[in-house]
Amino acid sequence: MSETHSAGKGRAVAIGNFDGVHRGHQALLGEVIRFAKEHHLEPAVLTFDPHPTAVVAPDRVPRQICSHEEKLRLLRAAGVTHIEVLPFTASVARLSPEQFVESILAGTLRARAVFVGENFRFGNKKAGDCETLRKLGVTHQYFAHCLKPVVYRGEVVSSTSVRRYIETARIVRANRLLARPFSLSGPVVSGQGIGSKQTVPTLNLRPAPNQVLPPGVYVTRTRELSGSRHWQSITNVGTRPTFGGEDFTIETYLLSPFEAPSPAAIAVDFLHHVRSERQFPSPVELRAQILRDVGVANKYWRRVERWCEPRPSVY
Image 1 (tube, rainbow, N blue to C red):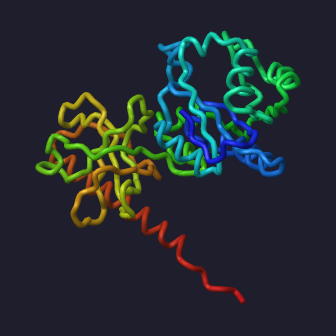
Image 2: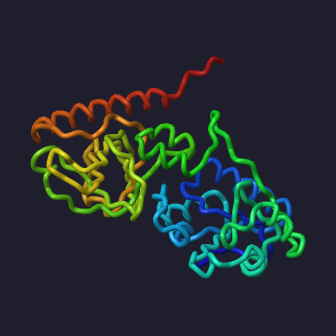
Image 3: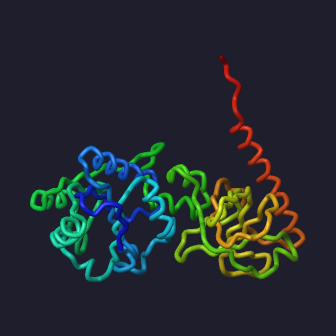
């Protein structure tokens, strides 16, 4: 599968999984776009679906930071005009580094420049590295650029780090490495009707399969995917232990009412961790806690609005 705006140019190609499209990925993409502009090439990305680990080590497949569709949207927003999604299969995994370069980089993509992180490995049993990529570039007429990792506030930015922060509810740190709020998106689905009857009514979100989830209660912003509506909100991600739940649910309470129709699909941006999920003795006590959480969220939004107020000029 590929998306392209130009079929005639050679290409400057960034290679990677790009899960999350975090600060490190953004720096790599920025270099590709800059180089492509200077050398009259098309800026391109080569990525994979499914994640290569699903084929070579299926018991170690990482949970994804963003869905495949969201990843493509973020890559396009970064300025890439050609996206090559390589279906990663057992036959692709068996390609030698030489075969990978000849068939895919030089052949399918017509690469004239290739950009990767310096820890990049490719080919059967990860036999190829940056030096391999450079040597093969002499034969296949492309320049290889191996970039050092991006360090943000003393920490190397990686999908693994972002994933760990999300899973441990350190959402502000995850957002800093992403350079944007972590978001979950998907269709609005019917819940079990418990909230509307016993606590507070919510919008229930079904996330993408194998999605990394941040456990707990958060101040969020909810956006309608098919329109321009958006709402301040508070979101619970968990198993609803007060009601004996086992499966993870994502329940969002909007802080302001909305007019019909109810959104068919939403994106929820996670901004601030309020508390961990816990079991309450009764739905009444849970509802009281939710209302306290709403108070925390309202206070957060008031503070944000004060920060965003225009400041009087000193001149």
